[in-house]
Structures are given as structure tokens and as C-alpha cells.
Image (tube, rainbow, N blue to C red):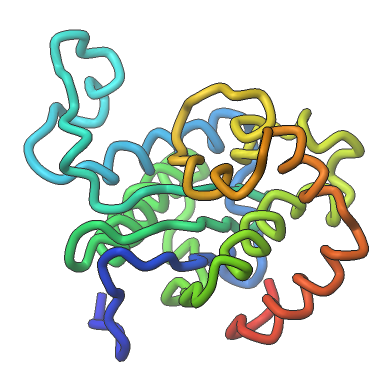
Amino acid sequence: MPSRKTPFINGYYYHIYNRGVEKRNIFGTGKDYNHFLKTMIYYQLEGPKPRFSKFFKYQLFKPDLDKRLVDITCYCLMPNHFHFLVKQLRDNGISELISKLSNSYTKYFNTKNNRVGPLFQGEFKAVLVESDEQLLHVSRYIHLNPLVSNLVKNLSLYKWSSYDEYISGTSRYCQKEDILTFFKSRDKYKEFAMDQADYGRSLEMIKHQMFEEI
């Protein structure tokens, strides 16, 4: 993968997104979504580790969480695209994670579906988050994708985003404190996420900064 014109900066947040080539679906089954998420966690960690096939079964292996390339703040996987809100922790961490994740998942998907060629539409897109306000709005924008796209009527039932982690208190993949610290409770974040009037303003702000609309 060629170097990006503007390198990512450690300690800063970025909205990362990409979609399937020709807008095709990149997830077809629950197994696909789960495989993508496991691959994300596998390549989030720098340094030696067991083979992917053994990583989640090897009970004696304790990953060194201090070697994360990025913090994953929130995410949403949609049938034909994905969104991440991440903070880079190590030099080239975002590029390394997304490159390895995309390449590995493409190999999995192509083998499973007897296809060849790229699965994602070119280089992933990235938007720098420049304020706390934008950070909160991006998290809401990401979490509301399934609702806005009419995939679900109850957002907490969508299995392939971090929204339930935020409102239920469960811990799976995300560093949620960076967002939740702005709210008195998880219910307050839920109210913020579901505030349609305010969401309209944040949506326009985010669209203005995106390279292209997903």
C-alpha cells in the first residue's frame, strides 16, 4: 500500500471508512461479520502472537494490551461498508491495521465465495477529528447507520456495531471512556444518539468533511 500524503498523528482520532468495490456487499452472513471483527482484534495488536486460527483458542496466550496499534473507540459494520472511529497509538498504526485487516478479510471472503480480485474500493478513507464536538457527533453518526438505513427499528438489536457496548456496559472491542466521559450516564449517551434534530446538524457537518458519501 502506498504511503498516504498526510500521515496519521499519534494521539489523534480519525473516522475511517470504506465500502465494497462497485458498492457490492462485503458481508453476507453472521460468520462474515464475526470473522471481520476477530481479524480486527488480531491485527490491532503489535508483536508476536499465535496464528490467527489459534489466537482465540489459545488459553495460555495473554495479549499485551500495551502493544495496541490503535484504540478502537467505536465501529459499525454495514452490509456493503464499514466505519471505525479510532485513535492512533503507534506510528503508522492505522495504516498497518486497516491494510492487514482488509487484505486478510479479502482472502477469507474470496476463498469462501470462490472469487478473485479486490473486495474493497481502493484506499480506505480517513477524516481527522478536530474537536470534542466532532468526536461525539462522529460516534453518533457511526452508531446510527443501521437505523438511518432502515436495517433495524431498535438500534440496540443490531449486532454488528459497538452501540450496545455503549448503552449496556458490556466490554468487547472498544475503548468507550473517551466518549462516555462527556455524559453523566449511559442513558444520557443514548439520549444524545437518538436526538434526531441534533443528529441532522452533525450529519451535515460530517458529510461536508467526508471525501465521498458511503
